[in-house]
Image 1 (cartoon, rainbow, N blue to C red):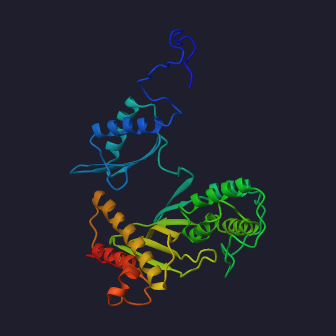
Image 2 (tube, helix red, strand yellow):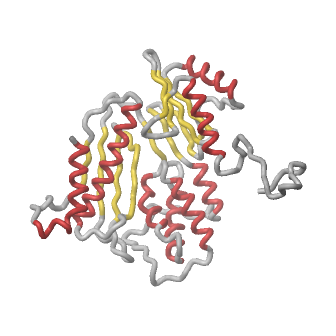
Image 3 (cartoon, rainbow, N blue to C red):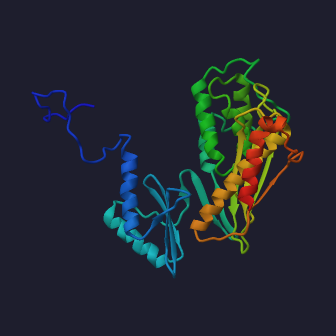
Length: 341
């Protein structure tokens, strides 16, 4: 960083001016902007969510309003249209903003209003990704990954363009926001970012061909009179051919709607399928617990959450010789029981 022209002191040429404000482009700028916006929203009666910091909530006896913030883009919704219009007017007095009307497109996600709910999809984003990969004319395929295919770090030719692979797989990660059906495949492709092989790039092309044939798919979010949280989890055992670590996955439903999902390689080797399943169930339970806390902040009180996992054997009787081997498994099991009480 250098001094602006005309501000240099000949006696102290190495000194700089201290600017009492954020400068756009510096690392402090995002935090400074969020603090300024947060202060303005707090003055308008909003409270920041403890479960999700970009969410602000304003509750009154006759209405409720939510604001979701991403940098300088805001989604505003609530039960009172007149208050929302008044809120936009007040924000316009404090900030330079543009009202884009009803929500149709946000951060690459298309929002369509259907008769029975909202449809979230990323058709345009997928088309742009296919163009970047030069696969607009690719032939569609029925599955995101070949049946029985195991990707490995060994025995393949190194892919020549690591940057291209990382760029495309990074974009595929964003698509999983509305496409849980590709989460497992994207997770597998992400495991080889550091040194992708030709076989990994070919697997990615298969996924892109699948997306081309299912470009119209997305999430349908439907209203429901009876809301309840159900979580489902599963795991393989020693599925990675390179380090024999397991991969687990879960999906969380709020009523009829899938609202959260994940596919992730476990951090340690599971010595049995039971241990892998308990870790999967613990991950699903943690996610459902967070979602329950978030809904409580939104004013939605739900009955006891339910988590379902495939456990192939019961927790064995604890003997002293077994304790160290089962310690991590026991912690996962206790966590699950505690959260379900």
